[in-house]
Image 1 (cartoon, helix red, strand yellow):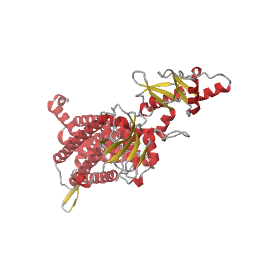
Image 2: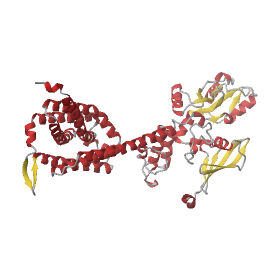
Image 3: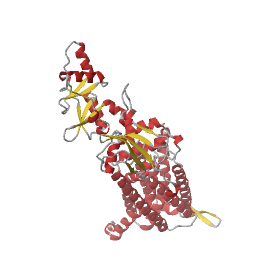
Image 4: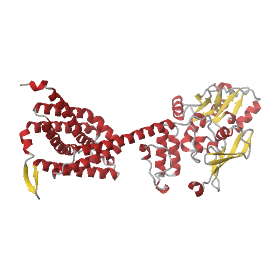
Length: 526
């Protein structure tokens, strides 16, 4: 009775039928993936599994009624000399539905509609989506079951092949759905396949059978081309990731989006899609707001050494100096904190002016050494975000910046960090901060302070910066390219700009003119 179980031809037929069922079910699986993506994330797996289980039940029921299934091919009526069977009508209806649905989906995606803008329309679509899956299951199930009946004579073998194929599709459906949804070009390609399959079903319903080999050859060729496209995009993303970190590329994309204009940049497809090619007048934020957002996005990249006050510019009290000179310094002081040194050595700490005031008000003699406090100490490569957190935790607004040998390079305050967001916040009578000492001339050139940090300079002059550079200021940029200390009126071209030193004092570059080089149309043509 069960002698057919040990027949090798039966097992060969089973394996072949499983493969064919999987091939015939791929288009059904792709359509389920596209439909399930329209649901809220919490319902997608449920719809996908429900659709495949309904397909399994439907195919098993069709296999159990083989005699009825064979009657579907019998002619029911004739139109213009062509007989139509129940199978032909199902193919016509299924193919027409597939053409309609695939066309609507293509139109929605090509028009660029964003369904996430209407979340209220996404919550109650579970059963309509499942109903659409069931309709397509009926068409694809009929096709696969008829194929099974034509290949194998034993009902148990057919049912086993269908069950195994559906279980394998269940295992593959989630990663396939995730892959399809993460790649928009894959969705367009799959919808194009569904259009082609829908057209073949309609043609089959009218008696014009299109060989399956032609369809699968076209699909296979398209899949190979798309695989090469995905490989090219992967290599592009890897190149961009190696060239600049994701954080920097994301910040650049957001800033271009805020400006409402498109600039040449090395962007991958996902980042480039964020950039709108609109006019400057359509910018979402004004110039001041864009600069503030740019500074916030760059805080994770900037180090404290780029905003510190250099040790050469720090006003300090030297305890070894005569009392008269110390009092004269206190009398002309305009800061709330003073760095204290002795014999021009390393700083001993800082003194708060309010502590000096309280000491005098209580009638005590001036004792600066007793009021010295120890500030925070930052390594020069510390970025601004962790520096801000240390200021918050230590409840102090002052820190020394030291190099790898422990020598003090400068000081940084909480106000310095906040100015990287809000811009210059000068006190009354305070000189212009080098970080914001830049102005545009009538001829379109810029005059900038040589001590201006490059991170602030690029807000006005878009220079390419090397993230691994060992200098932070405009003066450092000129010295790096000239390999010497520039003299007055020295010139050097960097990128598309000509840099001319205007003022040099004691080997320190004070003023630099930045002249954009005008590229003529003839040069562009060349």
